[in-house]
Length: 320
Image 1: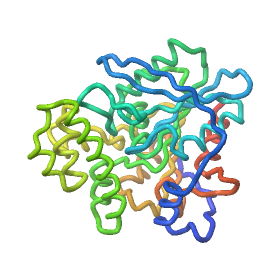
Image 2: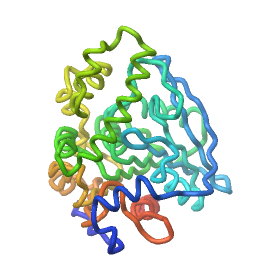
Image 3: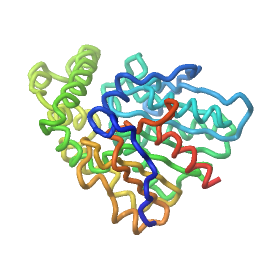
């Protein structure tokens, strides 16, 4: 599929990737989204909290929303999409990954970029308990990598899933990790690390004996966190093994349903490998859009409806 020419025109002040990223993460607010929480059990005895919001009219359409690293279902990039889709007669279910809903999960493990088994559990729950016939999935950042891996690693994607949208995706986890460790991203790096360590400290207390004080205190960087915790808690040898096996890049050629990937060229979190031009050109189902601006999930547009949210609605309408 030829590369999609982006029509995104960023407001002048928000052409700076750092500014658009920070504004979107810290300043943006989305009001009047009413969510109803549902707890579902996972096959390993743990649980997920799902936050539902609904169209005013009965519908057979649903969008599943997946947040990014240390996010949750109330982040504006999630509720903004939910609100837009709800007003266009599409229900939304926002997934809180393990431990991200405000209630600690039960297991020592939590969530990670490649944990498609949890997404599979959500999809199966929806298919078994609900009556939606047209399902779309939108993933942001880590959630985008997860959904691209989910639809690319299998040949049995449920036929109710009609389209996928992935935004600001670190398709190469190793490459993105390298970018996050550079000095220009030090504020983002340290903020992520602070939140991750806070949660890990609670988990360390909850699961005594699983992680030593020496191991915990050795974590100085995000890669250290993935070496010490993410990899070991989820069955990988080390951080690089986790990055290699969980990156969606290797699965893009096998995607068989309409998929839109939007990665901004000025997203400082993304390495060159996160712009899969070759894969998009060779897969008619993969539509790659690379706006010049937008930072990391910072596609600011008019009336507080972000460009990636409008494009998601436009894209799923084109495949209906």
